[in-house]
Length: 350
Ligand code: SF4
Image 1 (tube, rainbow, N blue to C red):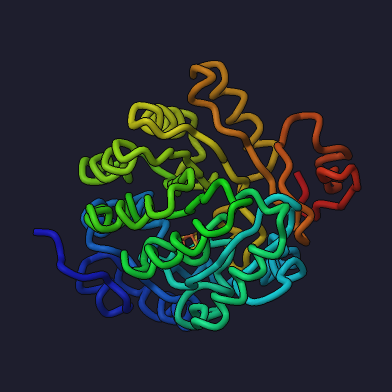
Image 2 (image 1 turned 90 degrees about the horizontal axis):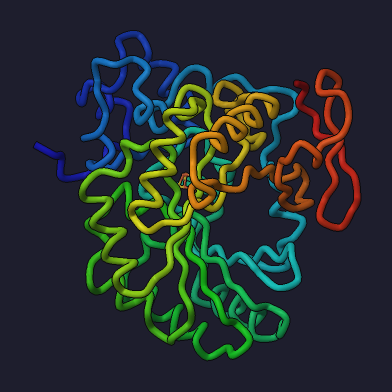
């Protein structure tokens, strides 16, 4: 039977059979800095007898997280230099991130914002901070798209989401509201009529970018939750982080991308893993990622192909990792060109 509440401690991981004997101390050391949360829906998908289970690997802390490499950084994609006031990241002229909440229903061990999210993170915006952030969006008439992210915005109550969507509705130059979330997969029952009603308040075009990394995450309840969103007129796109030991396999990626498309979710981003602290065990090389994407292209319809993306460390934006976007000798470190044509070193070799 599915548990009724999330696992949030090492003792609960042990009791659920999700932590091997002898791993408690290192898991506790990792969890001291980066919180644990595994929802009942995700715990239910884990095969405790499989030490390499790809769902467990995403959420169960390990000793590998205690290893920090030289190139890793607390703010790997450079949010902070583009934060003019709390809750806003304004990196590109026509869009902003609005980070209302800094908690998530699950804590992914590879999270690129792991220093900012969670109980130890940046906290939820106060009413005054949210009002100032919305005033910023109102004052910057070039902002066409507001991206609610965080943290996971769909942990907010339907009432709070309604308030935010209604506020955004009063800003005529904002045409698109995009919401980045893992909730339809990790807590599908939250996508109920009240939540959908909240997302539709104000009449903006709403996109939900679903974060899922393995085809098993698209369980029957998750597929139903996505169908409820799409049936309500909300457009869905996907984002997946390419992760060693979880989805660095062409058959797994093939199945995942087909599952997205079958469920009316357009594959959008395949992220190369960021240089977040203690995540080196999840990282594969850019060369390996390019080979996987090449293999996907030989097997899948163009509809199923996401853009393979690198967030340039330091906040210089995203680039698609085509064979041409990276120059230099892979064995000595790459040189990447940002959207403005400026070049930056990418410190990871191979
Ligand atoms: S849901 Fe997103 S923001 Fe939250 S821990 Fe996972 S990757 Fe990080």
